[in-house]
Amino acid sequence: MRTPFIAGNWKMYKTPSEAETFAEALKKQKLPEDVRIAIIPPYVDLVPLKEKLKGTSVEVGSQNVFYEDEGAYTGEISLPMLKEIGADCVIIGHSERRQYFNETDGSCCRKLRKVLRESSLTPILCVGEKLSDREAGEQLMVVSKELRADFSGLTEDEAARVVIAYEPIWAIGTGKTATPDQAEDMCRSIRGIIRDLYSDETAESIIIQYGGSVKPENVKELMEKPDIDGALVGGASLIPEKFAAILDFKSEA
Ligand code: PGA
Image (cartoon, rainbow, N blue to C red):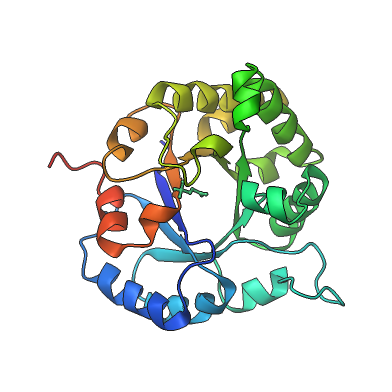
């Protein structure tokens, strides 16, 4: 049985005081006990958010991590820093980092190895195709290439701890969600690639999220698909009531 995992990626939104206000409001909502929940805010919000969410089941994660422990790397954040503040998870290779900040499969792979070998944090690895790839019918080839490169050198035990987020780039922040069938098709193929690289057991246990304009109105249909185990939510995770409504995808109302 795979536990559903829903994470809110705040991107570059919310100051520390806004993050605290969000946490107070989220705590007033009824949160499901059988869903793994995380908020992934900007770095400066990590400590206050962790503090405010103490005693709840809500995890806190970082949007990035560098593969060196320390050094002259202006603007980067290290794994020891994230471990010391008790971060639970970390996004690796979000398409916005690949697009604007030169993140490559090579750096994603180094970051994944670092996190898996030197911490218990859960890495959330993002993969996904551009609109032009999909229009050319090359989405599976692109995602497969990314995934195989990012997973290279990982042992089966390490691979099993990775959460994969399938995020078609054309669906991020555009209001254009992949149809549940399109999302399911790719998530099933991703599970197939993991089966191919490792084993049936790891393929069946690995958590695969869908991301790209997930909102209260479409989450249920997406989560009903057999190979979609969760969601990485951007815009809709910024409003506590909306995020809570997404977490509540199992309710009939
Ligand atoms: P979105 O972003 O939900 O705003 O489309 C998703 C993401 O980038 O993780």
